[in-house]
Amino acid sequence: MTSWRDQLSTLAHDRLPTDLATAWTGLMRPGIRLTPAGEGPRVARLGGDPELPAEAEWPTWPGEGPLNFVAALDCAALPREYLSIPLPAAGTLLFFYFDGDRRSVQADSAAVEDAEGSRVLFVPAEVPVTARRAPEGVVPYPAQEQYAEIVATAPERSTFCWTAPGPRAAPP
Image 1 (cartoon, rainbow, N blue to C red):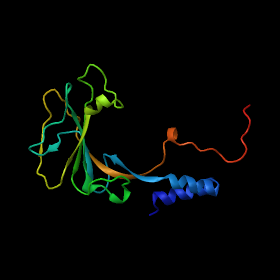
Image 2: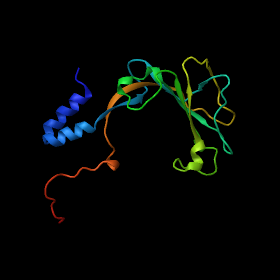
Image 3: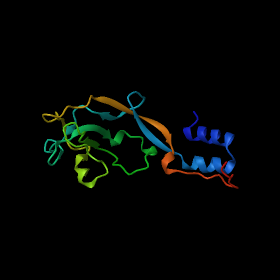
Image 4: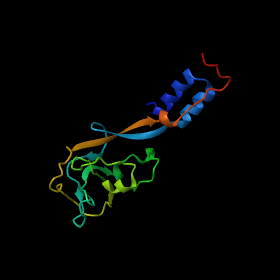
């Protein structure tokens, strides 16, 4: 089976000058996309009820209320050879976010004062957990199992600019 990197390299070298094809393929990185259907182990679950340790409190945003449970990511199930960020080898990352449905003003994710509107909890693999229902007033997102799909990623167009070498044509 041909890898995604080999396929992109072949395509780039077939259609671009060699130096540009080499530079372009050098920017590509493997990524893990969550998808509701797939082969292999389940790596995450979106929505539903989180599995929390007995002593863990439900995350809240002071002055606003409880956060919504968004996702659980099983660190041990991730295909480690495709990770480019340091994540624990085992355990679960739980993602919570205040979705704004119960707030009079929409949260600004870039504002420091709104940082309490999101939380990531790490639960080590050896810690016992149980499913916890959402607090009153919080409507859980529908649960959906997620699997890892390996994809190619590249810099976003808004953050990457390539200028062709050589003389620049004058504007018309």
